[in-house]
Length: 454
Image (tube, rainbow, N blue to C red; front, top):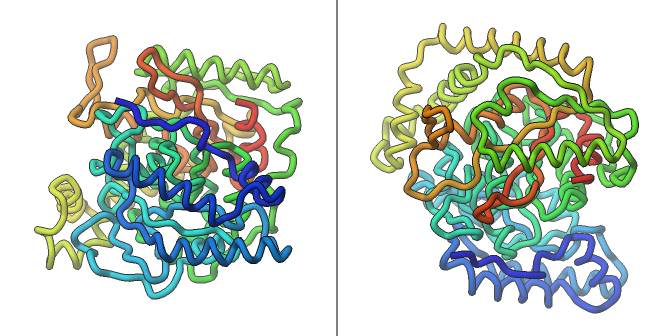
C-alpha cells in the first residue's frame, strides 16, 4: 500500500514564489502540512514529536514579516523537520530511545539556530533508528510501500518528506544515514564534507564519522538548506573554517570539463539489476551535459567494511559507556548488542582501523587526482520489507540488509568527502532507485551542480 500524495511536494523555491505573489502565506502553508500529517502520520510514523502550536506561532510571525517586506530569504516560513538527534530548544532530544526520554533541550543546536535565523518553521522532531545506530529506522514505514523500511537512520526525516508532511528536513550521516533513506524513499539527501556543518548540540554516534546534512525534494532545495547550515563552530572540534559559498549559484551551468569516475570494481558488485540500470542511465545523462566519463579502479575496497565498523563500534560504545552500565535495559536489543560488543573492542583494533583509514584517504586523494566526482549507486537494492533481514544476490550469496545499505555509502564517511543521493527512477515494483555522487572535500558546489542534472 502506498500513501504518496500528488503535487503537494512543492519545492522551497516554488513555496517562496507563492509567498511573494501573495497566493499563499506561511500560515496557510503550515495548515496544509498539518492536514497532511493528520492523514499520513498514523501510517508512516515519521515523527517522534510534533509541536504544532509552536509552529503556528512561528508561521504567524513569518507571515507578518513577509507582509511587511521583511523577508529573511528562501527558507522564511518554510516548515521543516529536525531529526531527533539534534537539539531544538524546548523539545525533547530522545534519539528515539527510552534512555533519553524526558531530556528537553535548553538551547538550539547551532544548525537549528541557523535555520531559525533564516526564518524556517520547525514543525517537529523526526524518528531515527535508536541513537542513529542502524540502517532501517524500525518505527517508520516507507510511504511508497508501507510494508517496507524507510531506511535509516534518518528514516523519519526522509519518510516525512516523501509523504509531503514537511518541505525539508535535517538528518545525520555516519555510514550513509542521510543517503540511504533518501535513496529508498525517492528524495534528495546530502552528506556535506566533514567539518562544513557544525555538530554541537547533536548526539554523536561516532564523532570522527558523523555529519549533519539536509534532505529535500530537489537539489536546489538541498543547496538552499546547506547555505543556511554551513559555518564554523569553535565548540565543534571537527569544524572547519571556510569562506562562505552560495551553493545555489551555478547550479544550472553545464558540466564541460568535469571528469566523472565510473568504478569498474566494488560499487557495481552485488547490485540489483534495476538499480544498476537506473544508475547507469543517470551517468549517461551527465555525459549529455558535457561531463567526461572515466573508468576507474577503486583501491583497498576490502578495507571499507572492517574499518567503518572498527571505528564506529568503538566510538559509539565510548559515548554510551555510562548509560550502558546504568540503563542497559532501556536500549533496544539490536543497539544494546552493538554497544556491548564495542565495549570489548581492543584499543589496538581501533588504532589499526585509524591507520587503515589514513591509507584509504591517501589512496582516494590519488584517485581524485584523475577525476572530479565518483558516480555510484546509493544503495545496492531498493527498500527491503520490514521483516526482511537479508538480500540474496544472483550468485547465491547473501548479505544482511544493514551491511548492504551501508556498503556503498560508508566510503564517503571514511574519507570525509561530500556525497549526495538523488532519485534515479523506479525499479520494476515501483520503488525508488538512488544515484550517488561523491566529490572533493568542500566542493559541494560542483557536487550539487552535477546532481542537478539528474
